[in-house]
Image (cartoon, rainbow, N blue to C red; front, side):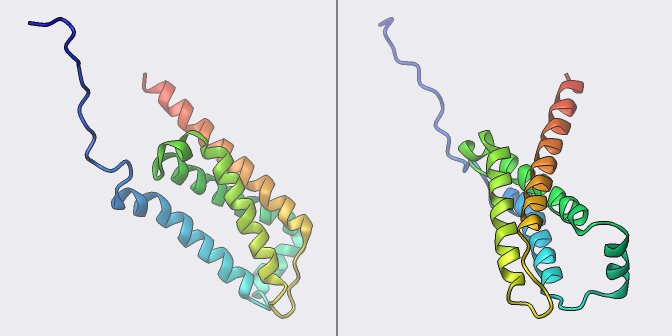
Length: 147
């Protein structure tokens, strides 16, 4: 028997990402992005929203809104995408959320009584960054505690 036999690893036949995992991880991202789009389409927000905006800055609301989107996007990039995206999940999630924030501000230019604000885009991007990093840190801590 030859000692130079090749040892082969098993061939992977299953897809890296299944349709179920795509739905599980990307479904919440798209649903929440749709909710943001719907909110941006309203010309006159309800009285409860208007009174809330008077009490706190709308930049804080943008920060929180996109913080959640950033966390959901990071989770989807990390667990519901290919290997390259998973390795660069924070960058991809933040970039995707920032682009979505830009599209949202452009969308508001066409909604009566609404306007696009570059500072809202800054708050959106900062919120997405905070959300993605927070989710990343939570996952790492959860992984360390299970060891």
